[in-house]
Amino acid sequence: MTNVFTRPLGRDGFQVPALTLGSWHTWDRTPFEETVNVIRAAVDAGASYFDVGVYRAMEPGQPDSPTDVIFGRAVQAAGVARDDYVLQVKSWVERSGSAEDIVAQFDQAVFRIGTDHAEIVVFGDLVGEHVPYEVIAEGAAALVASGRVRHWGVNNWSATEIRKIVAAAEKAGLVPPALAQLKYNVVRRSIAEGEPFRGVIADHGLKVQASDALEGGFLLGNPRRRPTGNDPGDIHGLVEEARPRLRALAGELGGTLAQLCLAYVLTNDDLCSIVVGARTTEQIGDDLGAFDLLERVGADRLRELLAPYWLDKGRVDPESSWSSVPDDDPVKYALILPDA
Image 1 (cartoon, rainbow, N blue to C red):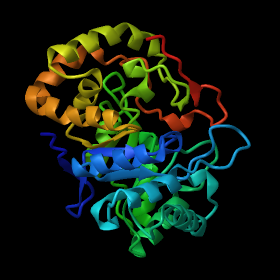
Image 2 (cartoon, one colour):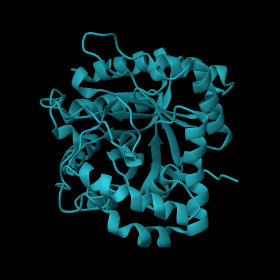
Image 3 (cartoon, rainbow, N blue to C red):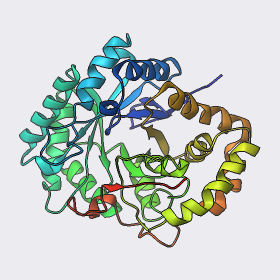
Image 4 (cartoon, one colour):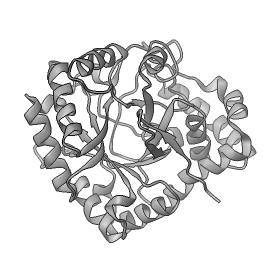
């Protein structure tokens, strides 16, 4: 039976499920009834943690995606009470000019979802000239002081950027960020598992939240057309070559490729949770099977078997971050079309 365990987050004994359902262009592409079923299945298995944000449209000139609004209605239709799940809301700091603007953006986000608070707020990519660190810290402090947020984190920030926000937080009398959401998976380990991030984690008690854990479906060879993250280190060709071997290994261990990839990430003790974009009950069921695979094979054995698949090793600057890619760069939201 699937056992979604929890991991600690922050300094107050708070625990979060190790699997999170994310909303980036997920629920706005899914039949509503299926979204309800996926949410219900996740909660029933203990994965009652949701990462939600107000996202830009997939096509220029279109309204913002309604994925957050859909989530709010779907979680209600699934019969999940607000006290029975952890809500994580994104805040886009490049859209804000003051601490008051950050608070107002948060208020808009939770209003669209249909609540008035979130357990966690995550400040998104730093692109070009952004709001000063002191302003971000002041906004986070105001949200925590109001009781509408318990913890805060950052998304795709570099180690240097995190150290700067920690210093600003200390100045504002705010505890440091509890998590860093990073592009991290079985073939992308250089940032989350390397220096200088290891030092940041050790110094500040930071936890890693893995995004793109299946490389937007590319790891599985899924043929689809949707915006996905860029390809730091230009490793997608290596992934294509490694995929058959990974799939065969998964079969030998009695699991699927998705389960093997997710189970590897779960072996990291610095991880708090993995964000997945499951759109069907079959997908969420497959993702949940990663916990069974981990329990059956063991973390040490999985890390040993998958050691050769660190494909971005030596190809990515471990200090860099996804946010260092300009928002208008054509590869930041590349259309990935796998052959498999």
